[in-house]
Length: 201
Image (cartoon, rainbow, N blue to C red; front, side, top):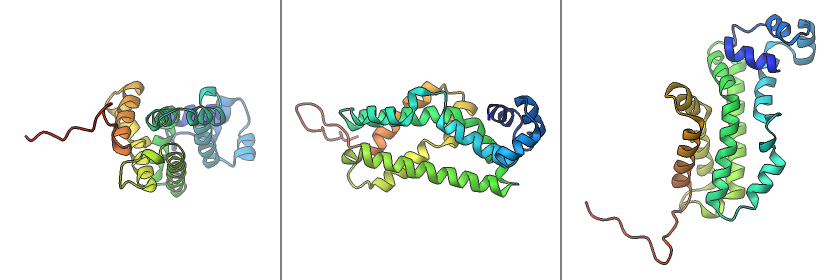
């Protein structure tokens, strides 16, 4: 899987062969076919491994979400949701680019992209329901909030900002946290008083 991840990221889908992955991983091509079902299976398992982040113990789901649940405010919980999403985006960005590049010619890649989008939207909507639903902006449903989160925390936008425009991951995370806080949560009222009305311009 590590070999497949690296070679897909370097060479794209068309340029990565089972023989090259097998050679890099020091196994036989037959082992790859028998265990993963060929190049499609390699790509699917590589993106799944990147999402899980086997080496990123800080974001293993059980401990991470237990910590999030104990935070006192929706804004703090949302901030940790964004951090979790950004860690996954950093790991999966190269493979999402491969999937998008292959989708025009490979129907399975287009279907894989659609499935990953559905899974992200479902998971992110459920987290909004669990951790910040009580403080959503008036009139904003949980489903709408999930769609906005999914769109703004998309791998496409992450790739644009961090690769094409040169933002650092920290810049992206700060921007996304601020934007989603404004977009999803009810504004905090100043301590000791109500919000001031906007001044006429």
